[in-house]
Length: 219
Ligand code: DC
Image 1 (cartoon, rainbow, N blue to C red):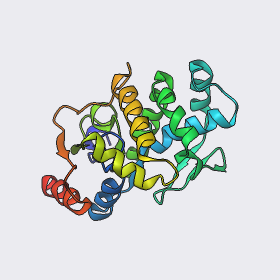
Image 2 (cartoon, rainbow, N blue to C red):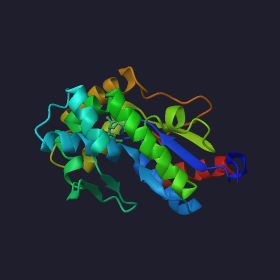
Image 3 (cartoon, rainbow, N blue to C red):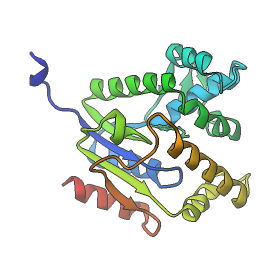
Image 4 (cartoon, protein in one colour):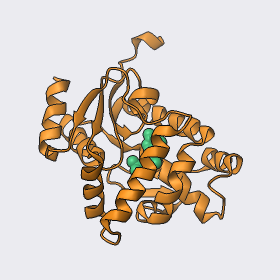
């Protein structure tokens, strides 16, 4: 069989900033269309987790690049994350990893390795619903559907502060603004709307509404 005979991958890319509703929506869409789901942000968080755990400076591009290329990362569909055999499910969502992850995600070697793994993940499964920042723009620019979810900064901060009960709204809003600036301003694969992306402002929509709009678009 030649390469052209292979069934095309069915990838649904869901990108957007933190608090845009990506994770909940991507999971629900995956369930409704019967495709596997991957949270690619958990992969970048896993690299940051491993760096912190190993006493590596997240800013040290070369050491973090080597680390990413040799690291075993397992992100299960249920959301458990195992990094080199260690259960990192809780810690990758904690404040230390959240602070360090943007600089790790700006590292071009880390990005190259994660991109390679993400493409492989979809290829062995025939596709999937993949959420992140650059899925539609870089990882799968030919995805069957590219969605970009967005919402007003104060709405996103309010959603996030409901999830992280130990931090006040101001702290969460400031952290979100800092991460937005880093994700959008980085040199390699910055967060942006992919060409041809279906853009949804989720500020005034419920999760069910967003899922319905996406499924309608999918046809
Ligand atoms: O979605 P999240 O907050 O878990 O993402 C964590 C970090 O990883 C965030 O700073 C952006 C980065 N990221 C990325 O650069 N590319 C992706 N495809 C997914 C996440």
